[in-house]
Image (tube, rainbow, N blue to C red):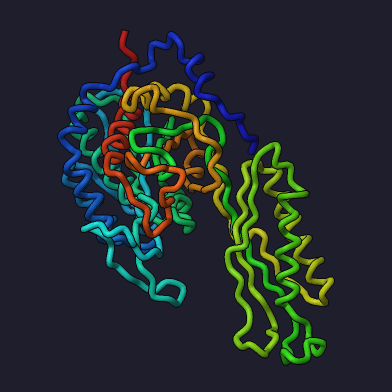
Length: 432
């Protein structure tokens, strides 16, 4: 996959100068819908927040979404496990687009103190853990439910068709892939696909978007260092996989710092877990290492895979140990790329609802999103909606995935208006 260059907001503005299709003001129907539906959007979001469900377990959430869509006269179908999809068919001819929201929560114990905070617990990887919407997917689901109701209310005069995608299992569990494999785009082939994410590093009232690469590719790796067990008092009687693993981790730091041209694009290799041994005086047989690789360039991605395998095998061999290295351990998520032309076209729509001064180009984000898989099938645009309220520094606010992640609910209003404006501006023919 060849990566398109990012398109700056200033260049977008130049491309759009004089364009009759560019919207310069918020649509009155967007403002009207926002005023009417915001109490519902807030209520839905708070309900989902209080009743979060982990990836692959979103049964209650999916049921609530499907019931709402049926009340709107739509015919939701289940795809990819607990995914829900439905089509709004306008009364007038026009293009096909898709709007996506993710629904899953995280194994995080909430510490926000909200009156509707989650008290849910579950078993995860053999441990009892809290469950929390620590990333904001409750907001995304509530926003798209509101947009669905607004569009359904305009159905007679709506141009084209809108595919609503309520996706499960975004948090590293392959929900987008599962929905696509179940035929999400088999009969409905959108011209464009749109999505949003509430983001703690963006101030409330602002929107961040950029053309080209936006979020990194994400890949997991798993390395097992195989030694030979012996008594801790006689390390020469075996092969110590703990020392070999420590050396491997240290040497792997040079993959990014010395072997990767990060002047071109950033990259990250992170070890997230080390497990080995059960007793203070026993050198174990093996140590397991797992972690993540984040990249923006396909060639850099493949080279880092090869470098990590090479470092693992040779450093272990220097200690007399062996490795079983799965690098990568699964298919991973590709880079989330915003189609430059689509992003340029829709930039005025975002500016119309947030104000031109409140829409900016963010730096590359090392987090990942499986929205990227939809954007490989059709031109996509994914944008960030500010989640951190006034008086709080976004640079130090609890990030997404934190037990203290605190959504300023003004993000629900801005996200709703932005997604609805984008949809209508793309669907409706230009005036004049």
